[in-house]
Image (tube, rainbow, N blue to C red; front, side, top):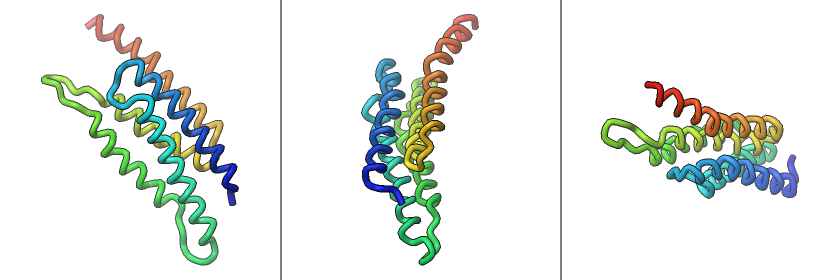
Length: 144
């Protein structure tokens, strides 16, 4: 069973990783920026910690599946992401921001369950996707 200090450390780490991706979104003036990404990452981390805590409390007493509550984050974040998607005449904007919110929720779940290295690596991959691939996309779009 995790101590409350260990849980607080995980929450701080989740806030940091969410903030790293959120800064990139903020710099590009996207609908969901710094604070939104931090809140989603912390929220999903809290849900994962709660899920694991409930599992520890009821282990051997009742059937408890820590994945059930966490699975609802994946469903629920879809509603938040959908709010960032806007149809603008012939194009749709906000899909990347919605995807970054969904991904950052996964980061929060990973941090909550103690996957520190995996969550840090995933954050680096997300940032690389947002920063590097946007430049590749711009170059390809200009050639068309």
